Structures are given as C-alpha cells and as structure tokens.
Length: 189
Length: 189
DNA sequence: TTGCAAGCGGAACTTCGTTTCCGTTATCGT
DNA sequence: ACGATAACGGAAACGAAGTTCCGCTTGCAA
Image (cartoon, each protein chain N blue to C red):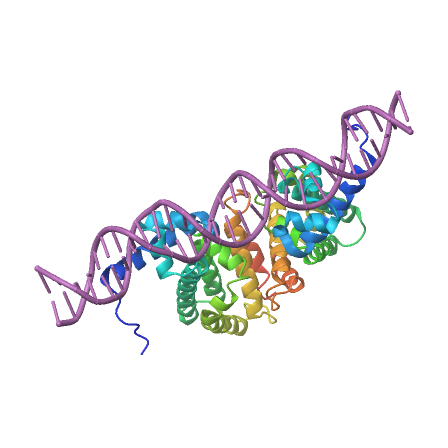
C-alpha cells in the first residue's frame, strides 16, 4: 500500500543523485548550501531537485531523518553490546562527535534542534530508549551519577555537536577534549 | 586625540536610541532582527540607523563588544572576590547563563563565536586573565581538576549559551541543569 | 515503432532584507 | 535671527536565495 507506484528509472536515478549531492553540499557548507549548487553537483537542473523535494526544507528533512535513523541504529547496537556501560556511553558520544565533525549539516541539525523537532521525533524514541538503557546499566554499575536523565545526555550531545561544528572556525576548540571534560560530569562520584 | 569632534546633540541622542532599540530587538528576535524594525522601534528612519552604523554587522558588533566588555568586568570582579574558588567559578557561569537566557542575540553571539572572533578578541584577553586566575585558585584549593584550561571554560560557556538559547524551543532543556552536570566535569575528583 | 505522460533543464520570477540616495529638516556658530 | 551644513526620513534600488513555469526530452507500454 505504501509502494508509491514504481518510479521511472531515470527519475529514481536522479533522486539518488540529488540526495547524494545534497549530502555532500550540506556536509561541507552546512545548512546554507544553496539549491542551485546542489543541482549543479548532482548534474541536474534546479527543476529536478524541486520535483523530488518540494522545498529546501523537505530536502534537509530527508537527510536529517536518514542521519538520525543511522544514529539510532548505532545507539541500539551500543546499548546492546558487551563491555562497561560507561565506556559504551562514551563510545556512542564519540561516534556522534565524529559524524558531526565530518558533516556540518548534521552538526547544525543536532546542535540547534530548533526546527527539526518534529523530524527527529520519529527516531528520537528509539534513541531515548537506547540511551535510557545505557544510563540504567551505568547507574546499576555505579558508573553514572544517580540523578542522570536522558535529557542530560541530549543536552550534552547537542553541545558536543555545537563544539564539533565550531572547530571549523575556532582551532582552540576540540570536541574530543569537550567530551572528556563535560561527560565527566555524568560520572558517579 | 580620539575625541572625534563633538557630535551634534540630536545625532548623539539618536545614536543612543538606535543602540537601545537594537539591544531590545536582538534580545527578543536574535541575530535575525531586521533593520527596518530596529529603526521603527527607535522612532527613526533606516537612513539614520545606517549613518551611525554602516552595516548591520557593525551594529551587531557594537552590541556584542559592549556585552563582552560587561562580562569581562563581571569576570574580573568575581575573580577578585572572596569565597571558595569553585563557587565563584560557578557564579560567573550562572551570571553568563542568566544573561544569555534573557538575550537571544547575546546567546547566539557566544554560542557561535564564528564571526565575532575579532570583535571578541579585544575583551577576551581580560576574560582569559580573569578565568585563568579563577582556575589557578581553584586548582590550588584542590577544587578544580588539575588539567583544566581556559579553553575548557570557553567551550563550556559556549555550550551553556547554546543550551540557554535552545530553551526557547526545547522546554526539556535547562541551562541551570546543564551547568550542574557539565561543570561537574571540571571538578577535581 | 509510435504516442504520450512523466520527467527534465534552467531562465525568469518572487520574496525579503539590506543599503543607497536625495529632498527636507534641525542644529549651531556668528 | 540667519545661513551653512550636519543629520534625518523613507521611498526606491539592489542583491541574494528560494521557487515556479513551460517548452523540450526521455522512458515505457501498446
């Protein structure tokens, strides 16, 4: 029922090219990559971009949704993995940090969830569940502070993304160092 | 020598009105407050705004410079004050948090120092000096982690501003809570 | 092979915010 | 009081980015 009538072959191909180009453009330029530029990168006309994604926002949304879905996958895997809970929590943060550092668009989306609230909501429940599990395990093992909440982790992740993004203009900032310091505040004393 | 020829009375008056209006506009709208709106608030024409501040950026810069100057004042006062070093460090952060929470423009400027690097540099040296002193005192008192640096504090402050700004769209975020958790990572163990 | 709907390209248009320009008005020294 | 001139107001020009439109092309079914 959801299999929206098979698309024409070239249309599908172009859709993919646009997504790929957009991914690259947003990764380097951040949220202010331009539609004509994305079209050029994809080797198509702007019209084509707009047929597949009615507005720029829709395009960004598609990419963010995809990113969050992958992150949620990772979070679930980490939550279910072996090893010390604390180390796994840090590992999850490291993976997010790396992703944000190499993709300004993602960094901006995470750092300023402002507009993307609705978009994220769908995947966020999975993320929350995985995070909750990690926190519970960590608390049980006496590694995570007793009053830690999922919101705390959200805030730290947003900040991490913000720092990662800023590293582009402030070489004295380092998301790895930030991770080391700020996440230490989540540890049990 | 720097006393640029006395300005005409009305010019000075208007300049002040513009600054005040801009302060208010940026505080509520953030960086994307609009020039015509600022002019209207000030009760002057756009032309007048542009005579005093050649571009929007120059206007923002003037405000940011002012804000940072005040913050540097506060930091110096806090660094020289009585009391436990840790408590004073937290107090400084609290003051910044409060200011950012009530002024979106400031929050954005601090959270994404990107463009404002040059602007801030002038006051930043005072800020750095005050912060260094607080950290040294804190370390000496065994309250601050041994490897803490001024950059760590900068990053935490930027993050704090970012969280404060986000509270407008994410009621589940709280800069006070963030301060509690993240700054704990700066404590000596 | 042929018909035609789906898809394409990209110039042109819209929107919206910044900045300029110039006729008018207010200030200030004489 | 008066004239020179600094400052003002705000309509209009400009510029940048997103979006629309339409004539042309291409894939697919008959």
